[in-house]
Image (cartoon, rainbow, N blue to C red):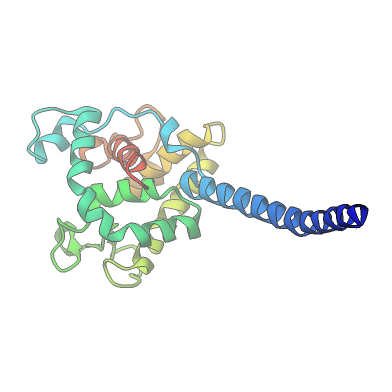
Amino acid sequence: MATWIWEDFISDSLGCLRRTVPMLLTLMILGLAALIGTSESQTGCYGNINKVDTTGASCRTAKAERLSYCGVRASTTIAAKDLRAMNNYKTIIKNAGRKRCVDPAVIAGIISRESHAGKALKGGWGDRGNGFGLMQVDKRYHRLVGRWNSEAHVLQGTGILVSMIKGIQKKFPRWTKDQQLKGGISAYNAGLRNVQTYNKMDIGTTGNDYANDVVARAKFFKRNGY
């Protein structure tokens, strides 16, 4: 009788293991896939924003924001002021980032610079009526898509950014991916032709600091959930 009970116990235990092991393997695979997906959504396909060098906002940009200091500190302060408003669009920013394979923090950095997360707009418009939406898509050069604060609009703006990054990749194939990312951000403001050298790419952009300011702001948003 004792032998039968022991054999039955072993049989039940093996059956339990056969059911449990595949389930555990499945959970492990799903967890790994989730981690990989999260990593991709955070860094995107076009370089790592945390590895991009930056001097931050110029004193001209900082002065316009009523700050008495310049550089990365100024960019960080400006971005921090925009964080609450930016969080209203966090979902659509992350969705656009995932669909275009662009770091959401970079998108947020551009939105902060372009429209202060919508706070600087009047009825969705800025730049004397030429710039539209959170990412200030210029109506003179692009057919506008979606409402000013919609995912469709952010997708369009992010798509324009991607085209600029790819243009920089072709123009400067020897630059690293991180350098090409920064060049694409600069070109988003002033166009591909304006980017001539790495160190002086921002000369000719608004405030002569566009990419450096956006990169510094993006790093702030990266630290704050984007």
